[in-house]
Amino acid sequence: MDRTQKEQMVTALKGVFDEAVLVVVTHYSGLDVAQINDLRVRMADAGARFKVTKNRLTRRALEGTQFAALDALFAGPTAIAYSEDPVAAAKVSVGFAKENDRLVIVGGALNDRLLGTDEIRALAALPSLDELRAQLVALLQTPAQRIASVLQAPSAQLARTMGAYAQTGEAG
Image (cartoon, rainbow, N blue to C red; front, side, top):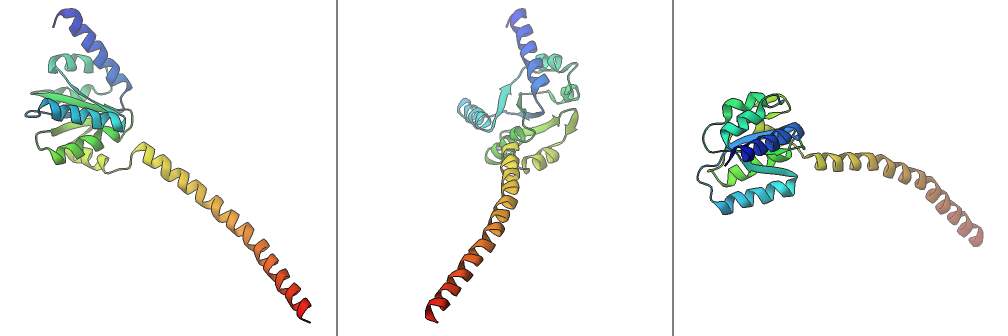
């Protein structure tokens, strides 16, 4: 890798760190190419990304970003999972690590707050942004459905009552 490629990589990583809300740092030693590709596909499906990084270049890219405190985690075969959704990268990383013990979660950060492995697992247990939106829509629709059924109930009762009077009038 020549100097210009390294500079481009640092610039690209700096862009990643500027846009991401969550970064999960992992060690991937022992994962083969097929497993890493599987993890990348899962990340993409969830709206996240997984990238194998060069530690020295990543440390340089971290300088001046909200994730600068992650610097100490970059040692050994390191990769990052990142997303703009505050849950997506953690959810996929933790799920994949449960299935494959060769992916080890080292730590991470949510915005400028450092997270340990336990906090990342707790974050992964939360619903994703899309799931929260769906729950919110369901909550907003429920009262409207109840109001509609309450408003329809008196008219239905009135129709039944008038029908009953009509039948008694015909009988009498």
